[in-house]
Image 1 (cartoon, rainbow, N blue to C red):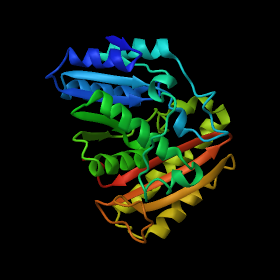
Image 2: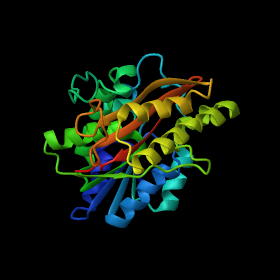
Image 3: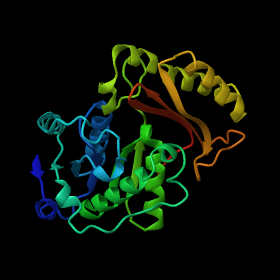
Length: 283
């Protein structure tokens, strides 16, 4: 595995593989099985797999966890080497945002909904850094996890609008044995918060079962999920949403093929998200 810390070295590494099919997995590091499942998919489907590890400061609002976000570069590199990644890109902030930096990407209409309401500017930072990375790597395929469904939808819109010519592969959520969706931020949870957090997958399973049984009323689904989460006093709800996949607008009824059911809560200082789809995010 070749490790690159500059744009110039990344370009040299990719030039040496010119003509090969390139898969790209962008991450913020502190890798877990969810990330590694994306790496494996890329290896199966491409000749070259590039992974970036970069904690992007522009997607953190003031007061969020930028400074304490878990980082372990040596461990991440060892895991990627074991999985057979070909190139690891580890840029510094000055490499990604050379001063004076003035260019940003806004995906209007999608960035202010769901997580965007409580994290203003977050998706501007996400879209900007992902566009920069896609321009640097120029992959045929880029891999994302369904857990960050809104992020995937924002990136899908950007890819379409800007004719980027990359295929997005959005792969299923990977869960721990107890059902909690894997996340680097799970490390923040106390034992009590971890137990309480299991209300998220329970609430979604309850809603998913109702949809499978024929329920289409979004209000009834939200009420069922709220009742499950409400049993845990350690959880504070950010949102419980049933929205259209194409525009993230609230919908009164589930439309099979075009609905996202999503939940965000806080357990202490830790923000957790989870979801299920009645449809597919791809392009």
